[in-house]
Image (cartoon, rainbow over all chains, first blue to last red; front, side):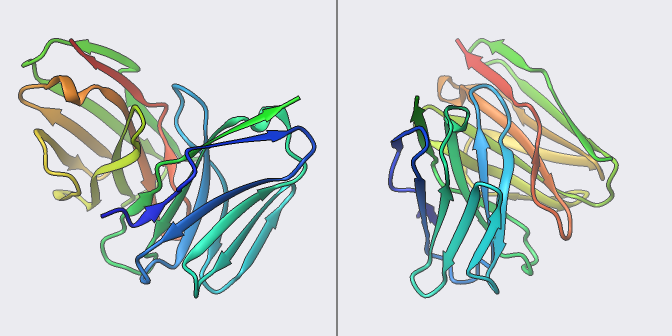
Length: 114
Length: 111
């Protein structure tokens, strides 16, 4: 049972346009959400996070939106750059839970074309 | 500052051989520790996590095991590797109020 779903395995965007990566979750106990970026043969690096008390968090070109009622979050990258080409993972956590597990989606491979 | 060390970076092992991957964290106390595997087309699969010494939770039943002998040390092991154990293994840590930090990963190829 996949608790965090990224239904698009890949996304191709033209440089300068907006990239929108989507993520859905099923566990209503999740209250902290993160996006990671990963290059081949490297560990993921943190991009941006959002807690369930907010519906938007912005950091430079990256904005994460959270729709709790729909159990959906999205990452917007504006404007997209070729260096943004990587696999993006959505992750979710029950921050106040005793178990502390962090669950990832399967990732979306973003290709930004010059 | 906090750092995470994971080794080896690459490993080629024959089927049926044992496995030991080690991860250590510096600069923090009582972190939550994680082992993930990224297999082709499978994304990041949580294998084990630990909230304290000797406390291990398994997410996926398989022939792998994990141990946490010290507060900042997390070990992934297997007694007999299978071909399906090939993949990219990642160690990560979190602590209260912080996001997860990942090691550089170990590329395991079982032949």
